[in-house]
Image (cartoon, rainbow, N blue to C red; front, side):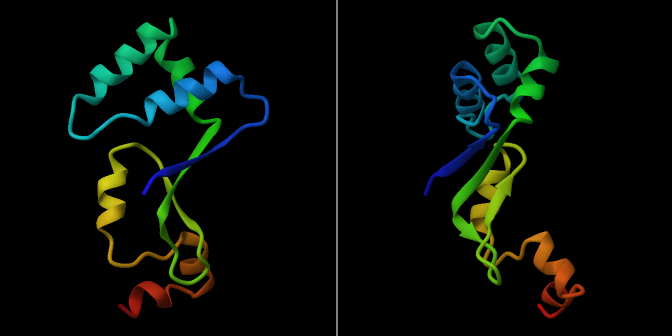
Length: 106
């Protein structure tokens, strides 16, 4: 049960390390303090931090769409516990393709 990273091909190793450190956040500790510490340690501003994070997609390796098998894409670290508690999950593409039948049928 881990997370998988997909990085922009132009991202340097230091930026990749920043992404890994960002995703090491454990909810419910202080998220704002986590961001401030990352910015301090990497001598960067919050806007640069989020620009860097936008170049990194993160997926859970143990939660997949029931229909197509796509892994669950995370937006923020706090999503991890919520996603892992799901009994089932359908990705937006499959919900759209089904005309909403996957969601309505449950």
